[in-house]
Every structure is written in C-alpha cells, then in structure tokens.
Length: 263
Image (cartoon, rainbow, N blue to C red; front, side, top):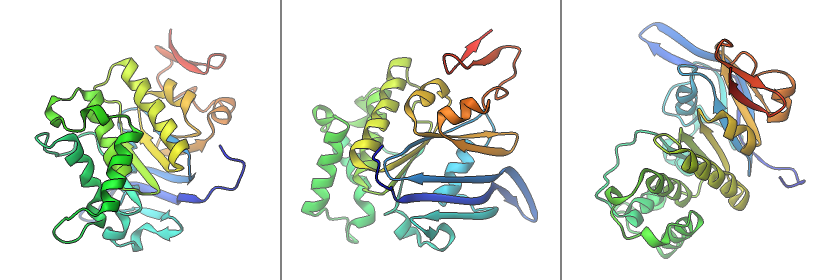
C-alpha cells in the first residue's frame, strides 16, 4: 500500500442489515462499522447464513438499510440516485441473468451502460475503456468467443473485466470463486489483489476462501453472531477473532500458520 493518505471509498456507520416483511424486521447482522480506501482488497467472511450476500446487496443499494448509514465517496447511499450509483459501484453477483450467447467483448461492453446515450452508442472513450479492461485481466485471446464456450474460470474473468470497464471507484463481488478449482480460486483472488494495486480501485468480495483471503487481503470483515469485526488480518489473528468462527470439534484456527486446519 502507498504511504500517502488514501481516499475513503466506502464507509458504514452502525449499519444493520436484514429484511423488512410488512411491519416485521428481521436483523441478519448489526453494528457494522468499516472503512474501505482506494486500492484496498477487502474480504467479507463468515459461515453460511451469516449475512455476507445480504451485506453486499445492502452496500450496493439492492437491499434497503435497516439502521445506520452507508457512505459512498462521502455521500449517503440512501440519497444517491441509482444512475449516479452505477458510476460509483460495479457489482458482480454469483448468479446473474446474463446471456451467454454474447461474445466476450459484447459482455464487457455492458459495463459502459451507465455512460452511453439512450441508443447505447459507444464512443471512442468507451471502446478504449473496454479494451483496457480486457487487457487488465488478460483475455485478449478470447475476446471474440461466445461466453457459452468459456470455462467457469474464463467467464469469471470476463465478469471482472465488465466491472473494470464500468470504471467505478468500488467493485463488489459476491463469491467470485464459486465453481472454481483450487488453482483458479487462488488465481482469481490473486488477480483481484493485483487489480486493486494497479487500478487503485477498492475491491470488496464475499468468500468462503478464508485461508486465501488471509494471505491476500488488506483487511477482512468477519460476520459472526449477528455482529461484525473489521480489521487487518494480523490484528484479527492477534485478537483471536477466528478462534470460534466454526464448531471446534472439527476445525480449528492454527495461529502459527495463520490458517484453518482439520482436527
């Protein structure tokens, strides 16, 4: 990380996430306080049902905030127009309804939608952004292929390129390594780390790959017991924040190797 002061891209203040059903409110997690700066790679981790996807959808404006505030570049998320939000946040969801009959370059070009005119005409600047995104994730050789011809790993890179083409200060990804083997899980997360450094964009992702996240991320947000713990991996390890994340009869956190192991 650069020694210079980085700008805060996203901040939460006493945030509670969950769902409203008529007059009932179901809280999934509360007291979420974090700051994400330019060029940082942040992982959201927790057991199934801890609220990882709910948090990402709340931060991106899909779900309503239950309590507290979310600030995007010092502006309240609740007061930000959706068309402006699309220029600040790129979102990559695990199960997105996208036509795989599109070519790679056509899918990446969809990232420019917030900037195109009403007929969707791409300018020279749009084309430049699209090609730069394709180069950043190294998919020039497959740019003319149809997306249904790609492996899961290749398709995930295309989705990342589309998010880069959108040219936002924050990229949010929900479990970007789903369906990938161990090599490609590591490859994609290492790519995200590289992109955060090269582009100075903040990248936030939810993941079950905790051991990889501990090695690659600047900070982690742990969701457990309906609360959140935020900090650098080294600080979280020192405070024993991982010790009771999973039932201890099967999995334990080994402080020496900074990783989870099976008993």
